[in-house]
Every structure is written in C-alpha cells, then in structure tokens.
Length: 208
Image 1: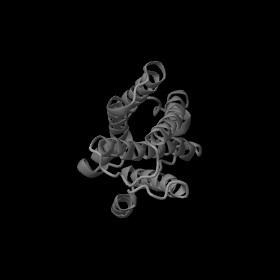
Image 2 (image 1 turned 180 degrees about the horizontal axis):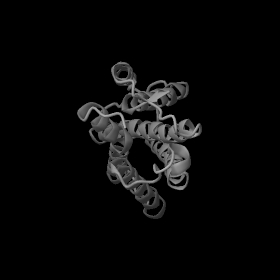
Image 3 (image 1 turned 90 degrees about the vertical axis):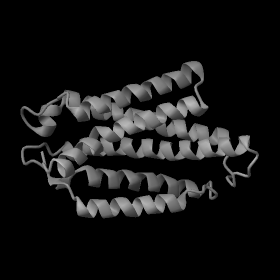
C-alpha cells in the first residue's frame, strides 16, 4: 500500500465532491461545479505523478483506519470551506443587491457549514487521540507521538477549530469572523500532513 501527500489530497477532494454531488439533489443551483471539477481533475493528475511511498512493513494493520479518520476530517473541513466560500459570496451579493442565483437561504448555508465543521472536528479529535495514545502500535516501535511539523500544525488547527466552535456556541460568531477562523484552521490542517509530506517527498526527495 502506498500513501503520501498527493493521494491524501486526492481523497480529500473526492470526499468534498461526494458531499457536493449529494447536496445537488436538494440544492441544484449551487454554482461551484466547474471550479470543483477542475480541482478534482488536477488532484488526480498530481496523485498520478506523486503516488506516495510504500507503507512501512512494521506499521500496524490498523494504520489505514487511522489515515481514514484523518482524511475524512480533511474532507469534512474541505466541504465546510466550500460552503463558507458560497456563503461569503452570497452575503456579498446581498449587500450589493446582486442576484446571487442560489436558492439556498443564507442561514441554511451557515448551518450546513458549521455541521461540517463540527463533524470534522470530532474526527480530527479522534485522529489526534489515536496518534497520541496508540502511536507505537500504529507506526511501530519508537514512532509514537512526536512534536514534528505535522503534529504541531495539526494541533494548532484543532485549537483553531475549537475556538471557532466555542465562539459560535458562546458568542454567536458568524459572518467574516467565523469564516476567517475556518480559513485559518483549514490552512493549518492542510500544512499538517499534506504540506509537510509535500516538502519531504518533493522538495527534500525523501519518503520517510
């Protein structure tokens, strides 16, 4: 089994597109299909060029499950990001009195965005806990929790999303404030695995 930054990115976009296709059944006027189609085609090509490295022989058979949790959280946050972008554009169009051509109420878009964020946060929490508690079992001896770039960015992302959800619950954060936190958390999460693996595999030419 091979894995790396490009397969992770490709799987993330696949999940995001899956959520989008399902939502098209209820909200057919969401106008992002062409952008997402180009993004999907691009990451497939990237994954073909950079297929990743073989999984270590001493790694646990449960490691793919750990990866699945992490990638699922990536996909949910990516879906939240798409909804936040649509929400931001809809609010801008409303302020400028422009026809948004979207039949989804702004409050519905906002609720959908935070549902994806909440679900992604739960899976990200489970991923980090699994890596912390069962690192030796998943990756082999002497490969437990380490404060490397991946871990630091992932924890910072978790903290950002935690602040966002608390701010939403306690102080009613919405609009630009909430979207900025979502962008920041997603960016940190992207740097966590995809970014660090990109530097290792492409820039440094290393596989481990």
